[in-house]
Image 1 (tube, rainbow, N blue to C red):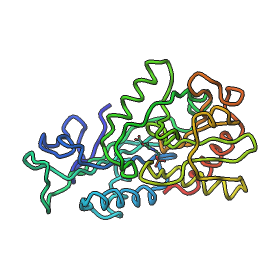
Image 2: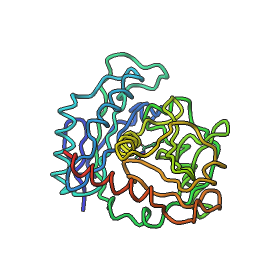
Image 3: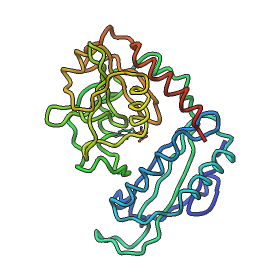
Image 4: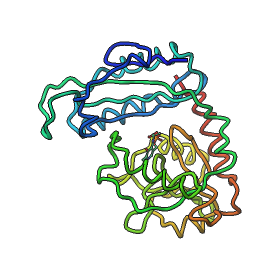
Length: 284
Ligand code: PDD
């Protein structure tokens, strides 16, 4: 069945949706995006995603395509038109179309595209089984805090993981894990401390990461925001990733070595359950 998508003010069947070949996202990856999960037909942490979108746009001197209220209305209308109960809404904002030139001009009209993707998020086989990851050098650009559509290296890293029969890659820079290809990386030390990398330009400031940190602290878990190495992760009791697309998903193997006993651990399971329960309550 064809989806209804949103392009620059119009709701259209996906086959009829068009953007210009001169769009700067196509020519220069000059665009940003957000991914918001939907459970029970409602948006999870929309305010967090809208805030990060505003920040990404500001960092790139791009005008906002519309107000946050209008964005919320478009998200809800797409959920309604597509009968979406569980899955994702992808939003892309680009600087717009202009004749090809590295320099952009002021006053361009942004391109705004949104589309849905139905997917089971709560009953996830990957979360039951746990992910196997490989480590790879982080060869992305230096502003990973901006959620740009420049996703070629993460795609290449994911393909390398698949070619080796694994699920994903954890990226490493200067000896420390930055994050996963499309998620934030976490470990649980043998004495029960949750560790995830501190915020900087080197990682995306995950909305799920922020929520899980909050829930972990509310549950009196000990948390440290600091870099960790692949060796520390291999030696940890547990490892997991967080993202809007995966919530909390255990990592059970790193570079062919089992993490802990090689099965999803209790801390990741508990955090996943708390995250789903709290997100359900707060979804709008
Ligand atoms: N990716 N780090 C990277 C590099 C990401 O691409 C993502 C999300 C995250 C987690 O962020 P959040 O919790 O806000 O989803 C961390 C999205 C889901 C994607 O590209 O599909």
